[in-house]
Image 1 (tube, helix red, strand yellow):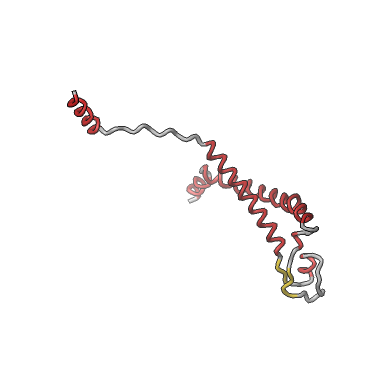
Image 2: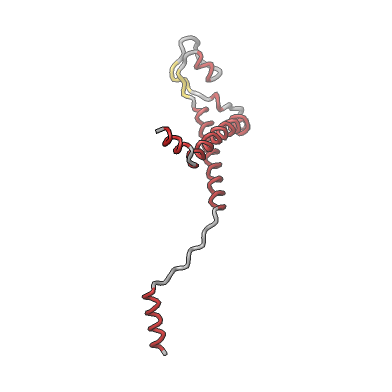
Length: 139
């Protein structure tokens, strides 16, 4: 059983998949930083100094501190139940960037794959013989 598992784990597809998952996780962290630190601050500035990570709705007040809460962290620390739609917007933007990057990657891979020229059709022998007979009758 161990030999079978080792053979399975060392196949090229499994190793390639593992490398892809590791690189994907690292890429996800880069995209998250890009969205949180580079893209969303200027958008928030254009929309009137809005910090998307602190956009939330209080569904139930906290027991420890009364609203208003300055941030999502403050609301959650006070025990409030919040709907964090700003964090959701950040996640949607991150997903869109990752999906677009994957699209570009797949598109580039497909362009690199050389389209194999179609093999010339082989005419069946009976058709060849019929053509020869036809040509002979024309003479």
